[in-house]
Amino acid sequence: MAENSVPVTATQHTIADRPGLRNAWQWLAMMTMTVDHIGYLYNISALRYAGRLGMPLYAILFVITIQKHQIHLKRILLLGLLSQVQYLYIFQEPQLNIIFGFAIFAWTAEGIRKQNWLKVTIGFLMMWIPISYGWYLYFTLGTFYWLNNKIAQCSVFAVLIVIYTYLSSVHPRQLLAIGVPFLTRLKAPRPNKYLYRYFYPGHLLILAVLYYFITGTFTLPFGNRYKVKSYQTEPYYYYYDANQFYEDTMPYDMNVRETDDETDEI
Image (tube, rainbow, N blue to C red):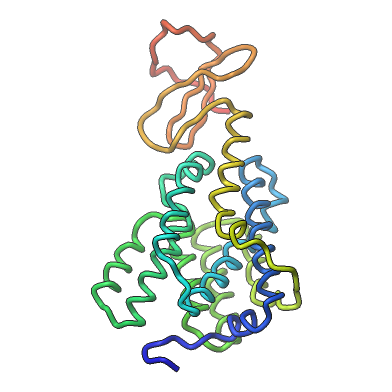
């Protein structure tokens, strides 16, 4: 084993030795993530159950890539940049998307492997940047990156999900993610590498375009309250204030200025 290298862990070894299983996980990760985002965007609660599997699947697959030293940090950062605008538009959260979280973890893990403590320090400082899934993402990656016993992996991961579900007050369906490491009896053909690589920004772009044609508005989660014209038969004022959505039934008039009158929340 090379000096300063991290041993391949139990779950990673199983997947690495079974290409059909890894292919199945890649397909499953893409499908569950897409279903989850559709459920979030259109408020379809049932779809979000399957979506709880998406992040852990991607996390374990990403850890395998790190272990094989196949990380291209510039490419990952480019994917994050290509995804950011549509991520902000769809989720209306002033934070970075999950791709940047993968990049930060890869940067930090590489620093630890090479004992570059300045790099490690910068990496841990970057982990304070608001990002999708936050500490839950980093602890999930760390669990499957450093623990080399499957029982330890599954136990720590299960405890992590319970703590995350409790502290973050998320829906109990999050507990379904505990079963991800046990999905080892799957097999599928290999997806196109470009499809898998660019799926995250691509599917967000498609969802963002569809969402725009449904709502007729484009807003990002920054700045103060402002209004835009909605594309409807009977025009209304729509106000966006952080994540609050309001409606005022006063007809649209280009000469009317923005007011601070209270509106009814819908």
